[in-house]
Image 1 (cartoon, one colour):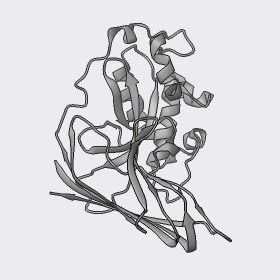
Image 2 (cartoon, one colour):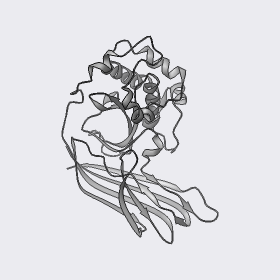
Image 3 (cartoon, rainbow, N blue to C red):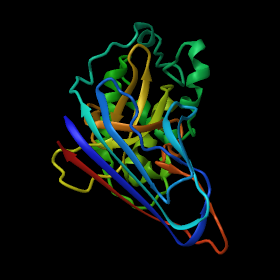
Image 4 (cartoon, one colour):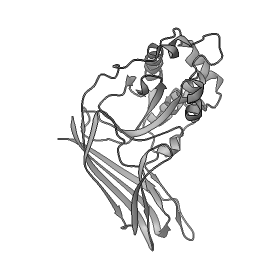
Length: 285
């Protein structure tokens, strides 16, 4: 699959403002099935400095800084993505991880002690009892893949996927009670369910190409869960599928807010809320 992706973001501040240093998380992450070519980033106003860096969770980003004032901040990225089809079920989970599942424990799954310092952030849950119970009710066998695919299919079938223009993220309990949510709401709810039973999970933001859509592409959100032996496994509760070559990740984090495509602030007098507009175009080459 060969795609060309163009992503434009416009922040309108309504009046001249001073822009503080920004971080732009709009470069695809490395994946063994994915090749990125001809990547370009354009920023207006032209920054006085730009440097590519890596975050604490090893997400690639561009640090940019400015002088003077501007009424708008515009970023535009374009690149070609060449992805190779693969079987998302082609992996093995370490036997010890399966054998240690204990249905009598409050938290059935557990990891090696030496891995917990790294995984601890991805195990933080909000303690929502109803989410944990829903998850435990579907944990009927030790094999984690069957459990994950069942939970994923249930969320897809029982929660309505909606489009929300607001930038805020619903709490997992609100999404659970409303029986609906955006892709990011459903993903965050599923992450809390998984963490409640002891599975390390993180939030992923990126592009998910649907060949049946000619337009209307936007940033997408999904989940990755860590399984020893298999590594980070991508799951999309919005479609009820494991992620495949159609998914192009931009950032992964234990917190959804860390995956926002643009981070930064601005200053001045009598500030108004900036208006954000975005456009994502995905073309097949």
